[in-house]
Image (cartoon, rainbow, N blue to C red; front, side):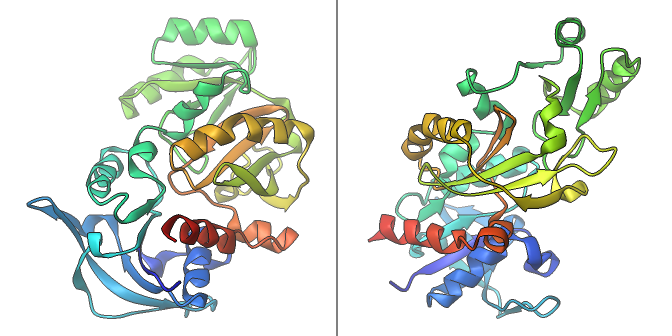
Length: 313
């Protein structure tokens, strides 16, 4: 099945391809003979209800520093395509949300992965709160008195922005730490949204697992271990990826959330699990494909395209 596909993404020239999931998806699409186009979110337009993008035909190869060729840009009617991959990185701000409104106009006539309506309504740190029996104690608020009371109850806490990504702005504040008020002052100046406050999970020292699900089924797992002296395990901030095995609790979590993911058209999802707790459900631009293949041999890019082709068959 030869498809026409466009990738809405951060510019391909800036990718670090060794660990980039979008690039892995592009490589697999080209291997299958799909016709690929590339555009950045700022080149998306809607005129008189018609959604288009200034897009370039693109070819890719797995050569760092020489990984792509772009053709001449042209106005591409996105409704004429088989599939659009929604792959730009967060922040999940109004710019990101606006692109989901535009892409919603072409879906499902053109399959958008993931479904833009449900991407918009499932921000990582809010979506997870639909499964409170699986998550650590969590508070979402700007109210200082609520935050102070939460720390008095739970002691060690994590404070992070509601729409952050990649570990940016994530702070651990222990029970005796006198910096909480100063940190909240900074958050109040920088962010208009509520903040996420969670009980700190000491198990993170052993790693924060990324589990990838396709059509609600787990297909791959890696563990991300924080660097010494660091509370965050994100690879953007020095976390180390290592192989991992699914535990019975991991499978229980996946079984609990899988039906919801399928119902909402969330084909490609990455969840974060620390110890026995689900901490995030990533639907905007999940990562981890290349690390999983490197450690286990599981080709998740191929499985995702299998799922896309099955939906379009």
